[in-house]
Each structure stands twice: as C-alpha cells, then as structure tokens.
Image (cartoon, rainbow, N blue to C red; front, side, top):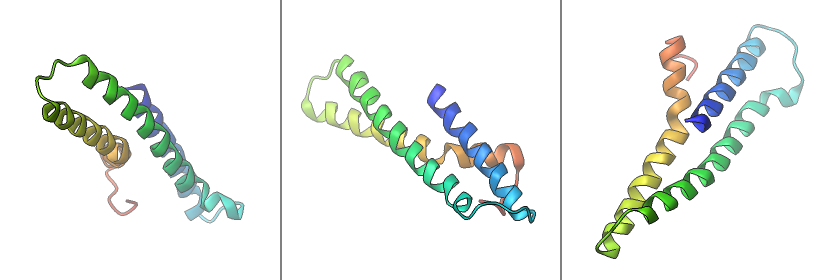
Length: 102
C-alpha cells in the first residue's frame, strides 16, 4: 500500500505543476516533460517491485500442478500491473472529479 501511496502522491504533485503551467505562469521548457517521464519511471520501478512480490507470494502457495502455479502467477502480476498503472487516474477522478484533465 505504501507503493500505491507514493505513486498517487507523485501524480498529485505533477498534476499541480501541470495546472500551474496552464494558468499562464512561466515555467522552464523541461517542466512540461518531467511529470510524464517521472510517472513512467515510477510505473517501471514499482512494476518490478510488484513482480518480485508476486513471485514470493506464488512460491508460498501450495500448488499441485505447474499450470495452476503459472495461472496464479499470471493473475497476480496482471492485477499488480493494472493497479500500478491506473490507480492514479482513479484517485484523481475520486478527489477532483474532473474528467477533462485525464
């Protein structure tokens, strides 16, 4: 849950920077790209962390067949990746209820 919190906090910070840019304040040229690049890096970093967690979780389970182990691994990695990628959009909609900025 800590990882999700960090991703959401970073996304809110970048949305505020982006909002300031649209209000006519002068910002450096690279500040237009920093939020997107940083968020993409966070997704990659936390994706690898979540994959390691999923592997450890699957190894602690007692599977009778190799196919059930693989299915469990696929399900866990898919859910972690989905949450990792889209959780910031859900929180943004929930708090700001502003669909135009998505």
